[in-house]
Image 1 (cartoon, rainbow, N blue to C red):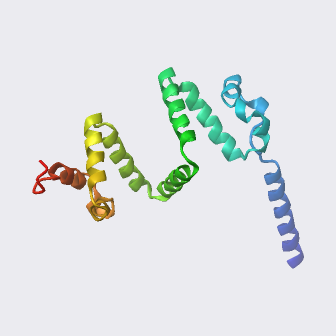
Image 2 (cartoon, one colour; image 1 turned 45 degrees about the vertical axis):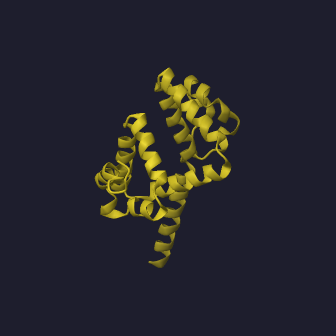
Image 3 (tube, rainbow, N blue to C red; image 1 turned 30 degrees about the vertical axis):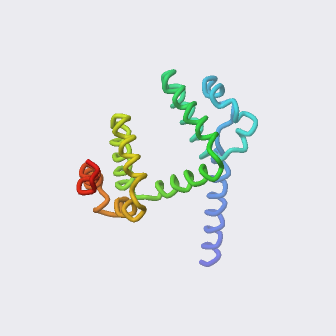
Length: 171
């Protein structure tokens, strides 16, 4: 009985190893469409060394790029140029915050996206005004207004900024 179980286990392991061996390790450069090859040209020499996950993300990015309008592409290039111009420590901080964001529950991520969308859709002069107000706040007040559970909801911060200055001689 033990001998049969031992052989059965051995065959199972061999079967799984064969299955894993036969799994694709990503796609070859030649299997990419001409459009994908054009967009992903900077990765051509190292394509085979990229993980399948990385290849897939790059292919999806190339697909998004191809579907963009010329204006959207220009905007993306400008954002990328700004990213490249950032000092390394600032890029590291942004990466760290992005990683923290990705670890948040999806509901929390959605709240943050909504807040960001709300702010971006404000008229530029209103955004500038809110940024200046934020910068002028003492750090303890900023800390109090940062999202920390229910008291950090956008409506409360909006109300705070709407009434900000009242009673301080700044109306």
